[in-house]
Image (cartoon, rainbow, N blue to C red):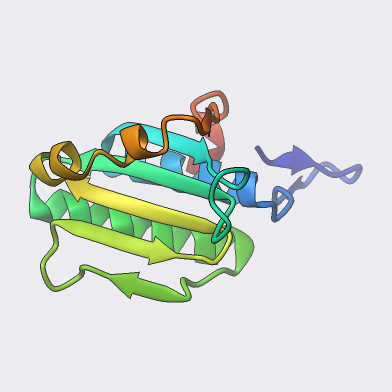
Length: 136
């Protein structure tokens, strides 16, 4: 995901909605989120380009994954969410970046809401190919 400049130093990836979504999934994975999906919802949903959906086994992991996404997207892209919902309840934390919306669910809440089925026509974007870039 990151590239090397002609001088040999690492540079940040381009700030596209897909790159932001992929980094969000990689970051959440590094904090224990599972069953992560990146969905290209732009063609079927007018409000954003990508959804990132993840699951955690307890509320502490939901918060840790959401916080890691916030921290990493701020560090790499200088992005902060426009809105955050669910921090009090900690069962479904939503981070709205405008073009990318991150959903971190407690496992039973994800089973209940089934966003990936609701947007079943969305293209799934591979996000694991460059997982080493998260460590940078």
